[in-house]
Image (tube, rainbow, N blue to C red):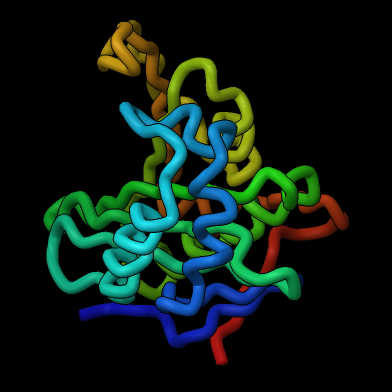
Length: 200
């Protein structure tokens, strides 16, 4: 079993496991149509659906075996503003997939990038991954920009590769290697080097 030393702190954020007390904050964004717009076959969740989602995420606090998902709440003074996750896709290839979802009211300040960078940093420097990739709908430009800000390169543009709400959709695939991550120079909205992380 592997997990970060909780909580992970960045300049502006705290990352920690989801708890049942986070239901109100999680429902505040899971219930919005603009948040679930790019999720396959998903509509805005009811409060009970969000409760089930939160219950499931409370068990995603560590990577124990291939296929496991590590999901962390992203917390500011305003509460939980989103989640970031790593799905352990391959033990042999030391590969994981990055995912994220955030409340739109907290966009535009680089918080999603800061949170994702903290989890990617743990994945490479603590968990020992070799490659992390992420995917998004071909029209989800905001997600693609976030991946680029992390230093990921676009590796693929799959044409009409999956069914999305009854139609064929394109998909972008971005990725970064451990050596690339360690040598990167990410500029944040406040300037300087990429966000440093620490655990307490």
